[in-house]
Image (cartoon, rainbow, N blue to C red; front, top):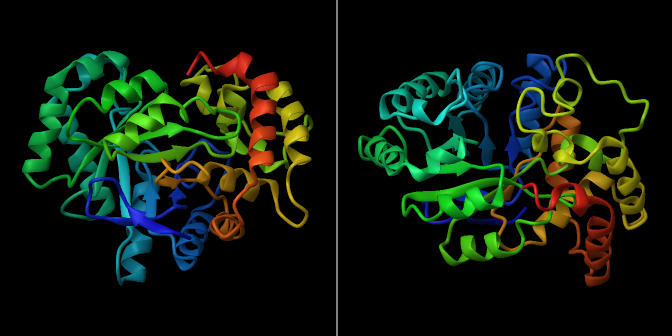
Length: 328
């Protein structure tokens, strides 16, 4: 894996990190033992970036991370968490300094640290991005030493462009994969110009781009690929990248033809993301140690050819773009 600076922050991170949503919840039943094994495998492979959130398992993900890092000792990876989704209702008016400080204090306790490496607003309502006082509150938390830096996790490209107008925003987390190619236009260009770190999430389109999901695949009732298939619980773009399931399966079969012999589709899909120079780190999740090891190995694949990149673009434009391009 390559190591590089995390935007304007004094952290060096690997280009493949560990997404800790799965070990928190909403992905079916994943035991705490499997979650720990997955995280340990990722760290053993050299990953130096972990992404979590206070709502992943109501703090379960953060607590597992804290315990694993304490047990391992040694140099700590960069740990990014998120705040805001604990609000009920989740409305812009709730993004006060008092509420954000409460969320930060809870994450400090869960992660057993004195200062958070990075806190990200967790896909806030768009109106939040037009409230400078929210970012002034984050500046105050940073000045107080409770956070080292802050960013925004966004659903839409336009929200990312608005967020990076604030000089204190050091990172944007956004969905970017073979099925969600729009960020690699104006947004990535602007982010690079401002030296904003880009965290690419949902890299495998909720498993579609692993090539292992079929029409017969069963998803548990507590798996968002079951209960959020049409956006019932949160933005539908977080589930299968917003692509209709049948369309996604059709596109996967076309992508499969481009994967080199001996290479898994998931690794291919992750390597595709790393072809974008603007991407600082991609954060695939893992249900177990084997998946975590495979994710790390993807960074060592040879760069994809121009012909392959053009072919993925053609599949996207023909099958996927009509469903997602203008929505996010």
